[in-house]
Length: 79
Picture 1 (cartoon, rainbow, N blue to C red):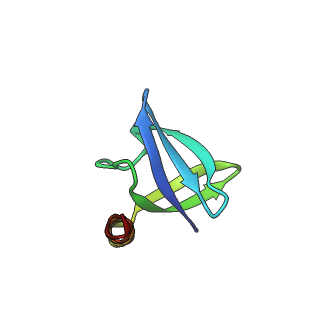
Picture 2 (picture 1 turned 90 degrees about the vertical axis):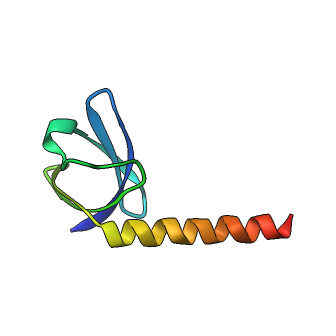
Picture 3 (picture 1 turned 180 degrees about the vertical axis):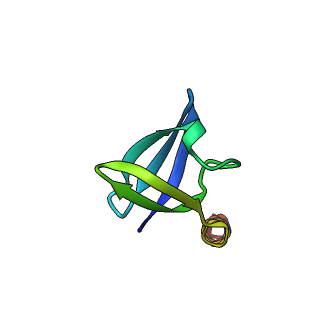
């Protein structure tokens, strides 16, 4: 199982960037879990170059947003 991040949801597809190399995969919205949002972290299983399992990771998403906010706060203090 790999990790990924929801890049965008548009035109009936969810685009997921997977792994350190951020390889892009598109899956139809109807095959994706409900309530996905841009920036959400997920556990991803890929078989035959297709996502077969996409499981949102709420804790990882919250942690990533917190780290991003902390970086922005540090940058603002340096201005």
